[in-house]
Figure 1 (cartoon, each protein chain N blue to C red):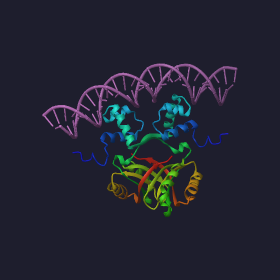
Figure 2 (spheres, helix red, strand yellow):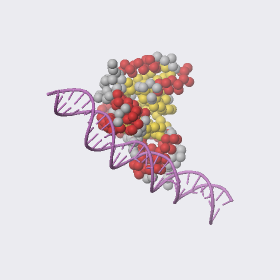
Figure 3 (cartoon, each protein chain N blue to C red):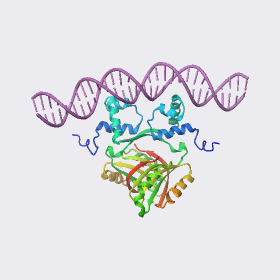
Figure 4 (cartoon, helix red, strand yellow):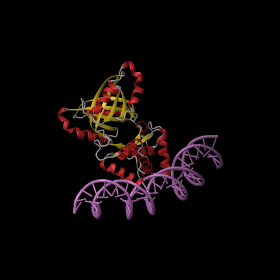
Length: 156
Length: 156
DNA sequence: GGGTCGTTCCGCATCTTCTTCGGCTTGGCG
DNA sequence: CGCCAAGCCGAAGAAGATGCGGAACGACCC
């Protein structure tokens, strides 16, 4: 009677899932505490976490820094549409955008736009320069649509 | 000749900024390494990091878990428009949405929609049930627009 | 100009935590 | 029934984290 354990989880058991869940909430929980929490020895826990990183289930550990505290109080979501005759260059273009300090996330999406950029800038002038110089000023971009972000909350 | 140090950074010096930058890239860098990297003693470094957490510059530490590995391979960005006669309920409604396991981010935005939901679901059926039951099925929601996410990259 | 107060940083000592390694148990298979 | 592979455990050495007393620095007020 365990109809929900093996889904499409490629080789992850319920202990792995618990570890992922705990680390997603608190990425700095000590290995000891994690081990006790999921019911295995610390050494085992360590082995599992290392494996989770190697297979890519855990992509990294990051501090969640409030952009407002590092001089970037203006946040926006910019929808970008690529010219239809340049669709094959989307990947490289978006990769270059990911290198801009203001860019925090790049979402490749379906719909009338090709991707969404989540950016955080020092002021609206910086935001404008990104849109006009790095996006609209490029031959690849057919159009953009900018939405100011008033607030951003993480889920769960 | 330091025209760029004191901006609107509320009491943060360049060492704090370096710490934030380093921890944003690697949230598990040991305190020792951090201290050496920014040029202060480990104890001082620890004090500063604790302060950064207390004032809210660091909102938390999280593992970046690939949703595909935890049985949620389908990601989408859902734009939600609230009925104009229920705008004052947006906050509570969005807060309740943040409790749904599938919801990873809530962005309150300007524009024709009121907020964006970044969700990760097990399959399109789950995605549909969220849209129809939790969003469109609600009296508060005037409309939604769903964009599948093909890929999601973090910036810098 | 000098003294004092407050703040920040440092270095040390201690305690916790991490990490590795060899051995053990378990389960599958011949 | 015995062998093999995989996973787990526990202990010990190494590394890191943390709290505290003291010193340096700067500001401010006599």
